[in-house]
Length: 165
Image (tube, rainbow, N blue to C red; front, side, top):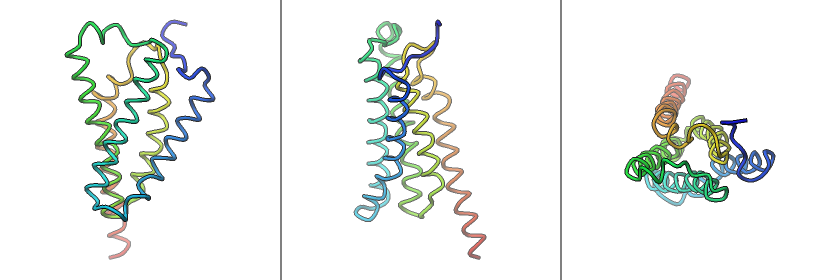
C-alpha cells in the first residue's frame, strides 16, 4: 500500500526489539555516570550520545534500504537545516531529563524519555512512509516533548516539595 512504512531491519519484531533495547539503555546509562561527573556534564554528554544514536537509527535505516527521500539530495541546505534542528532537539530531549535526574533526583522525566525513545527509535527504523519522520519530529513533535519533559521535572519537584514541606 502506498505510504505505508516498512521496517528497515526486515521484520517488525526485530524493529520493536531494537527500540525496546534503546529505551532500556536510556534508563540505564545515566545511572552509570551520574556519580562520576557533574550534572551538567552528564546531561550534555547524554544529550550528545542520544542525538547521535537516534540520528544513526534514522540515517542507517535509510542507507540500509536506499530510502532517502529525493528531496534530501535536491535541497541540501534545507536538509542540513532540518538535520541541525533535529540534532539540537534530540540532544535537548535527553539532556533535560538526565540533568533533572543528576541534579535533583527526578525520575519521572527519565521514565517518560524511555517511553518516547521506544516510539522514536521504532519510527526512525521505518522507511518509505509518506513523510520523513526526522523533519516532522524536529519541527513539531520534538520541541513539544522537550517542553513536556521539562514540565514533568518541574511537577515532580513541586510534588516533592509539597509532600516534604
